[in-house]
Length: 123
Image (cartoon, rainbow, N blue to C red; front, side, top):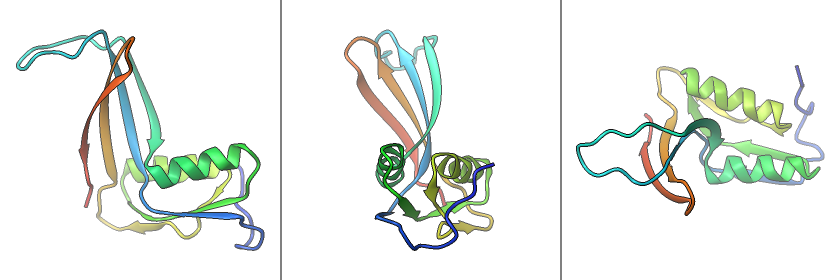
């Protein structure tokens, strides 16, 4: 298991904002109302502008930190584990007891990459 840096010393960029879990479903075309469509693929990632930016910079070798809040739910656990794995310092992430982390389902239309995002803010 990777350990975060011992302190904030050496952090070059800090992202303050939102992190969530994104489920992206690939569809051949956007379905009409009151219909069903089989997904061509389903992918889970950590999303949110600040979290994604810090992970991208960390992959480029920049020492990053993320500050934000998550719930103490399974999505929150996934967010924390992913930030750690991506070497983003996350000791300042506030885990709110009894709260739900933000979640999004994103329907991505194959071929044109159009996205429709359904999301919940969390609590």
